[in-house]
Image (tube, rainbow, N blue to C red; front, side, top):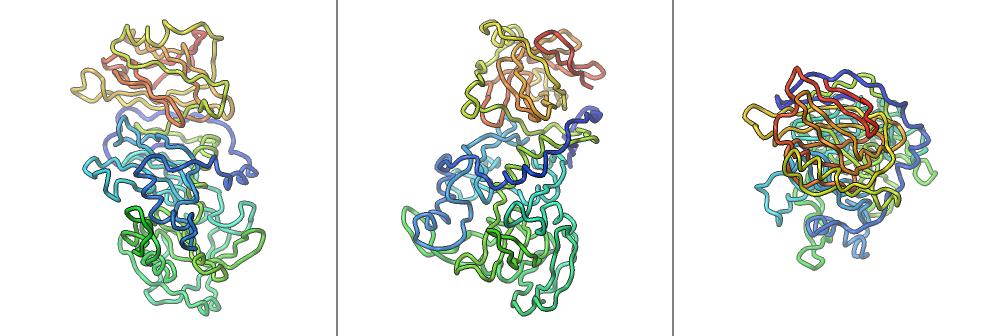
Length: 469
């Protein structure tokens, strides 16, 4: 894994690679189709966004593809995002996508653009996990089938679609007669022209053309839920609202669905995968792929297990996650409240803790965002620490983070999942620990990392674990 920045936000030296565990076994891909849990949309903005297109389907008012899914698959959760509040943004996962609260504070909460859906298909295909407007963590592209049954060994994967990103666009009006195989190899099959699908709309921004069946769907009207009632309206406020722009051409491929091989047209967009199956029932010929399911599995199962022999962090943003109490009854995530000063920070984290068994483990200081010039209270400085183990969560209570000037931060009770992260902010704030995020505040409020000095991490036995740089 490596982190790249497209702007000059990154500060500090490049961190050498740390080799972690081997990739998760291919057999685990079967879990990609399994929902984490069935829950309601979290909050009115998500509820309203879901209801507009999917409440009519859920209530039987119309028969057509889900744009999100029957319900959410996770509770609302925070994922790290540089421009968001406390460097995070509120999201919720569905079968088809991930809803996000915009980080643009100029957009009011009653605007339809207050909720966006992530560029998940792009991230799965490229392996570039976006953690800021211009910041990306580079992982391995997803070896997950773009459509159909997860055990299908013939359908292309998201990784295979990476080879199609730079293919030249079909001319508008040309027959879509390209076929793609498992490895992303493209051939021309003249017989496919008889299906009547053509290249319909060229998008200059991405230099790809939307297939006619998808363009018709993206501009369709139908039953939607508006102002507490069913009504007829455009399915999407903008043709690209749900999908984003196309990032590949459309290709025919053979897909196993419910154990039956079928000819399916597939096209990748920035946010979604759209499929067209001519033999499906009316309203279901065009469907949105289960990109939300696939992305959640990639981000929270495959990425933590991947080997990263060339990890070179050069930016300050990485995803964080902690063990969720509801999923693990023995976990005791009970971080304390706001820290206010150096002495208070240490007391808050340790004085009220009852003795527990010492813990150790393979943790790495993956990145330090150094306090910028003029940030005398280090309010913008933070440290990102990763649990580098393939398996085994690490309880960090009474671990310490130390700098060369004698500052010491003692960690509260927080358990970090294998492969995931915890972020330590150097000044004051409210500790936030929950599903898939962990932000703690040291209360030091002075620059912590001042090169060429180093920062070191120590376990609760007093053993040195890692140093930065």
